[in-house]
Length: 452
Image (cartoon, rainbow, N blue to C red):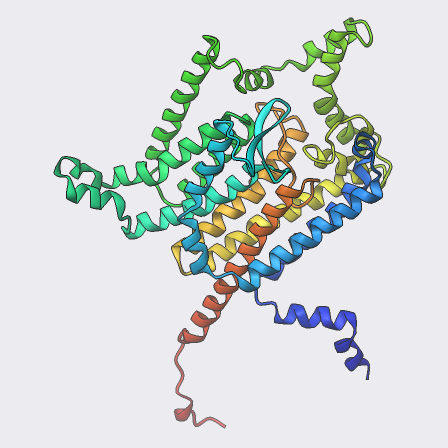
C-alpha cells in the first residue's frame, strides 16, 4: 500500500517522470537549482526596482515565477520535441538571422512592427509590437549554432557556394582553397557580428567575440589562423578609435568603452569627497561608484555566512544589483557559502557538459554542446569577475545565467538548456548502444568449462 501511494502521489509522479527522463539528469538538476535560486534572489533584491517602477516585490516575484514557468516549458519543449537534424538545418541560418536583426539596430531602422530602440543612449534593443527584445542575448545563441554548423561543414568538406563560384569562374579558382572557405564561412561572420554588436555594447561585443574565438579553437582550427582574426579585429578597433578621435564617431559607444577601461576609482572617490554634496561633480562621481563600490561592499559585508535572506543593505544602493550584480547580492545575503554553491553549480555544468560532448558521436553535436557550455559558464564567470572588480575586466555587466532578473536572457538560457538536454539524450543512447555492441575484454567459452 505504501509503495502504491508513492507511485501515485505527487512525489511518485516526480520520481516516475525522472525515471522516464533520458537526458542528462545532472544538467537538468543544475538548471532546476539555478531557477529556484533565481526566484528567491529576485524577490529579495528588488525593493529599489519596485520603488522605481511603482510596483511591489510580490508582483515582481510573481512575474519572475511566470518567467521561470516559461523557462521550464521551453526546456521541456526543446528536450521532447527537438531533433539534432532540425538544429543543424536551423543553424545554417544563424548568421543571416544575426545580421538581419543587428542591421536594424546599426542602421536605426523603423520597419513599423519592428524598430530599433535605445537603452541608456545606446541602440541595443528591438521594439517588437511595443515589447523590448534585448537582441544581443539571442545573437549569442544564433552565432554559436551557426559556428557549430560551419565548423562541421568545413571538417566534412561540404561547403557549396564558394566551390561552385570557383568552378564557374576560373579567375576565382583560389576560392576553393581551405583558407578562403574558413575566411568566408567562419572568420568573416565572427568579425562582422562582433563589430556590429560593438556599435551598441562594448561588453557584449568583447564577450561574444571571445566566446566565438574560443569555440573555434576548441573545434580544431589552427591557432595561427585565429591569431590573424584577432589581429584584423584589433586593426578594425584601432581604425574605429582613430575615427572617434577625429570626431567621426562621437555618438558611438567607443567613448564609453575608453572611460570604463581607464576608469580610476580612487580619483573618482577623491572627486566625490572633495565636491559639494549634491553638486553636479558630486552626483557624477557618486553615479560612477554606486555599482562597483556597492558590489564590493556587499561582498565584504557578506563574510562567510552572510547577513541572511532579506537582510541585504546594498540592494537599496546599487541600481541594478538584481541584474548585473546579482552575484554580489547573493554573497551579501548568503556569504562565502552561497558563493561556493554557485561556483560549484557552474563548474559542475562545465564538467558535465564536457562529458556529454565526449559521448556525442557526431562532430556537430560535440561543437554545439561545447559552444553552449562555454556560453553559459563563460558568462557566469565573467559576471562574477565584474562583481569582484577583477583587474583588466571592464566594469560593465553580463547577467548571471538563469539567476539574474531579466526575461530575454532567461528565455535564451532556457532554450540553451533545452538543446543541451536534447543532445544529451542522443549522446546517452549512443553510448548505451556502443556499450551493448562492445565485445568483452576477455573472451570465455562457457561451453568448454568443465569445472564443478
